[in-house]
Image 1 (cartoon, rainbow, N blue to C red):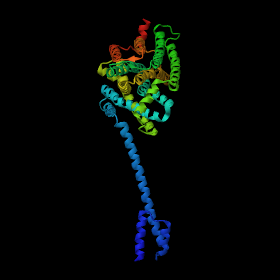
Image 2: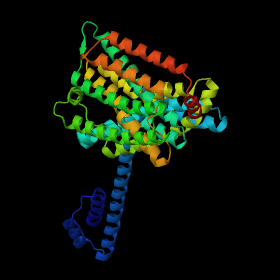
Image 3: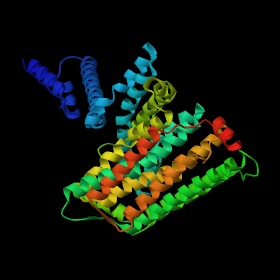
Image 4: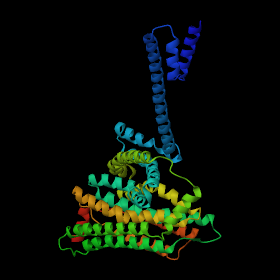
Length: 447
């Protein structure tokens, strides 16, 4: 009877995992059965217990992994209302395969790219938490205008050099006139009883870089249209490639100056904004890298479909390719900047709004354009800085207007309204502008 009670107690302790070695030894001494049989029973029970524990551990790890994946997807995909446009991307691919209607393919591709561009910026901001200010600044310079650069690379591969030039030009015009104008206008309406202030020194440096970019674009155009080239068609290309190298060096020096300067008001305001919100990173470093890869891949796929459909969309809508490239492409790429600039302006943080709008224009003019020239050189495409007279003149006047608006370091809703109206004039000009082909332009020059 005592043996049976000991056996039952032994089994219950084994099941609870609380039996130690002394209890096992005591049980073996008291047990009338052979030690070998008892040892086999114990080992079988111990093995079953270990297997159940390892199985529970694996199940727990699997559950944790699924929880992390679900949390990451929820943070990136379901945290923005703009992501409701994501399904239009796969729909564009489906429409192209079923109908081949280039107008709808182009339109749906642009809708699908819009939320991806915004999420790409979000993933870059998350990764910047782990990289520090220097590398974070380089990441922002690289991915801040990634959508425009990806579209440009696919257009270059297809030989659509004018699409590349016009889309980059449109991005600069959109940021300087539309994005900055909306920020000034909305901020001025909220703080209509006072003039908003921003750091004038930072604006002057950015305006100087933009004027340098305009100079690099004007000289090849003037060289071409005044027939003063040493070798017709070759000298302007050589000058463009040399100037592009200089522009990249200047932009690298500008980044170094901006990141290493102790008196950088834009960076100080960013730190203030982060301390006010007291927000840390919402995802890990490797999650950010994975989402950057996913977003970049999707943008690349949709950009390829949009570039291939641009000519068909121009014919279907009876709109010139120049208008589509200058107006439609930049609005998609600048959606995130547009929202951010307005959000900071209504919080009376105009230095950040200025950094978003003018900083993005500086990135495109001093990094994006020369990068595409160098990429075209590698691909064997004659991408140059001759944006033709109409486009170069438009950019020159725009930079002058914005520079005058920024010279006193103040902002109000009337200045914002003026910039928005200027953008409408530019849009109307490109709507009635017919972009001549290179062959037609050369014929006009010879006559």
